[in-house]
Amino acid sequence: MARPRDPNRKINQIHGVAPHLGAATPAVRELTVQDLHDLETKFKGEATGNATVEALTVDDLQSLENVFQAQRQDAAKRAQREGAPGPTEAEPIDWSISCCSCTPCCCCAAAEVDPFAA
Image: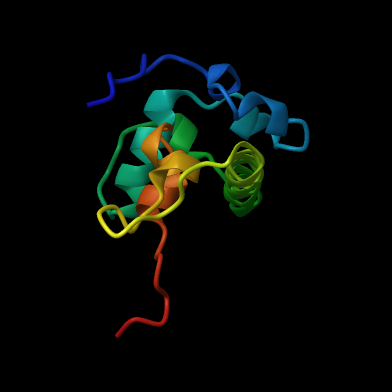
C-alpha cells in the first residue's frame, strides 16, 4: 500500500503534476494535498471547514481538472513509449498509466466516471 503523502505538501511538489501548472489558476497552484482530500470530501456533500476549498470557483475547478488531464495524457504517452504492460485478464484496469494510483487527486475520486449509468 502506498504511504500517505504529507498533507501540507503543495500540488506543485507532486511529481508529474508540477509541469502542468503553468496555465493553472493561482488558487490551484497553492493547493495542498489536504486541500485535494477536502475537495473530495466536499464533492461527497460533507462539510470540510477548509476555507481554501470553500473559496474555489468554477474556473479553479476547471483549471484543476485541466492540470490532472494533462498529467494523465503524459502518463499514457509515456506508457505507450515505454511499452507499459496495459490491461490484462487478471488486472483489467491498467493502473500503470492512471494518476489514480499515485496521486491524491480529488477530481478522479469525486468524478462521475460513467455519466450514462442509470
